[in-house]
Length: 539
Image (cartoon, rainbow, N blue to C red; front, side, top):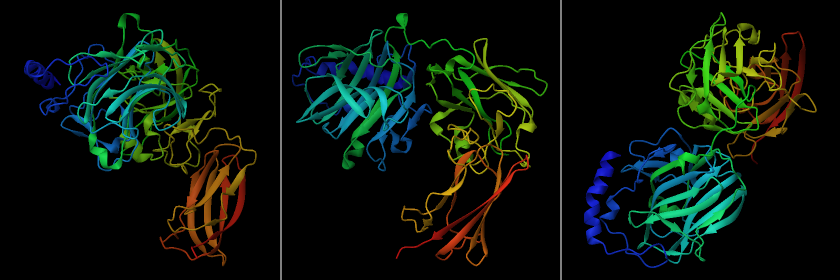
């Protein structure tokens, strides 16, 4: 970054010498960008006090989530790949709303239009900017060789315009600007821009000259980010030079987190005995009505004698955790995702090092300052008795409302579901089904890869955790064709699929088949189910 700052300021006197004075953002024409200007990467005036900053000088920061495969770095700028399909987005966790400044350096080759536009998501309640949410975003689009700044409030999929600029003439056939949006401690919004390398930000007003608008419909946030919509042929026209978030006025910063109390953050799942090449993880759940910053939390392990070890800070950066949200603490999110493909990667929080958890007997404690929020002590007896080797099988919480260490509240995760549920509801949470048993979603399936009923899906609901299952598939002649499940543990609800292949991997003929299902429980309860179905094919 320093080399670019030196380059920019070294050339600035020459640029000022060759350019005529440029008028403010008043709708008057400005001089188009010159080839010399296009060499310079847009950069902020300073990065003092930033809470989040990425100038894409080396690689895409691990703090970003979203359509990662749609973005790449070219000449230390964030651009789109040829495979990108609109719209695309990136988001980062932040709890900033009031008293906040968001800023970005944006360049677009070609005109901004109603379908070719950029959005800065300032405050969002969901990490996926494609999904319904509550919050605010700035959209920069255009028409007829002009561009417009529009500030929107969003509720679900409904958007309400709260501030829109007058149309500004394009800079030739391109858009190049540093864009800043601020929200005061009292909820006054303002848009500022530094277009065409003027060197300073100027307030963007509405057509009546009004520079600000007050809106405090929402005052909490969990994510911010950047989104692009584009015509397929224009994927290469968009680039982001930097993105930052910082307090608007550090001396009156109102984005403080509410006081955390014991029980607000609960230990929901732990994997202390991973697979031979796996990693530990601890899953937390926000059981409060507050947005809690993980930057305030510490974690420690407990040895087999009950002695608590050294504390480790969960995060050095702000990681907001909204109510009813999951966060998974691990040292290697990529490896964790590989071992548990169903895991919600957006909830993974990478730590340089976790405490050293004992494999079978030990514990974990979560702190906020010197206050213990929750603690769990685990033993081998918590694992299901039929599980011979518990490596890679987590312990899951059943009830949030029950004390963490109450006997029976933590049990083995269902091996049918992969042995762990990082980032999403536990397999062993209590089922609220009106009817228990095993059911077919459809009595026919056709494994022809046409996207419709390609697999047989067996759904189950059980009254209690701890059941094991065997499932065998027979043809109408009584011949065993597939051992689908053998001595696998079940959750309280879930589903099991079959792709129509035999044990030898062969495609089976069309016809009627029967699934023989046996479940058994450590307390001695056993049940049998027989479900008939048709393996079909296209006519």
